[in-house]
Image (cartoon, rainbow, N blue to C red):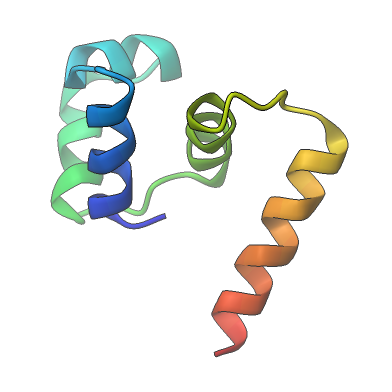
Length: 76
């Protein structure tokens, strides 16, 4: 997930930086680092937000589908 993708989902879900920090149990500063691109967005955070944004359940099948998609994108 890119910082722009993270920002887009946060806007769609009406999440503030502090909301995301609380949900992910990280500091506000960590979220700012993700949004600036200074540090990569953890896969677990990305998957959680993708599931939330798609109104999907975070199941093994969902995680497998996301991992497969990530691997396909990385191969290009």
